Length: 131
Image (cartoon, rainbow, N blue to C red; front, top):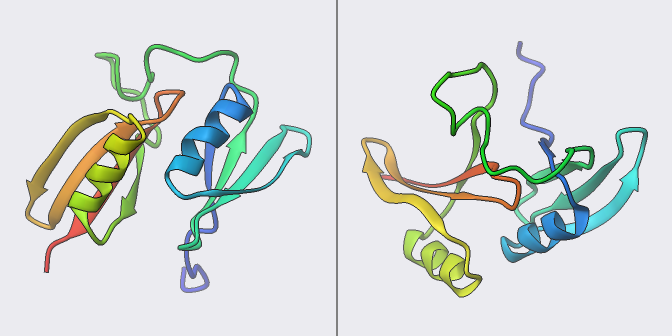
């Protein structure tokens, strides 16, 4: 469909707004507002224009991500990939905030990726496109 112009936002279900807000602020996201609406949600935005809707209705933090950490594979979105300009700088920033790199950096034909988990075990990929 030619009318689609870009991704508007990423919706992430989280269990605790203050923990989620603190985590995503370490990645450079800025809190805009929330909780708001019937779900409810809180909205954060990165200076790059990436918008997160934190859906504030997860029952409790979990030890496992049902889409990633169990042997049976369920349909669904498994992660978000954020494009980056400098792998070493991202690694340094993550380490300075005590955010564990769960996989990588690893090289693929299209570039280099590394993965982290947020406070609710949602997977985030940082991807540097190779030229």
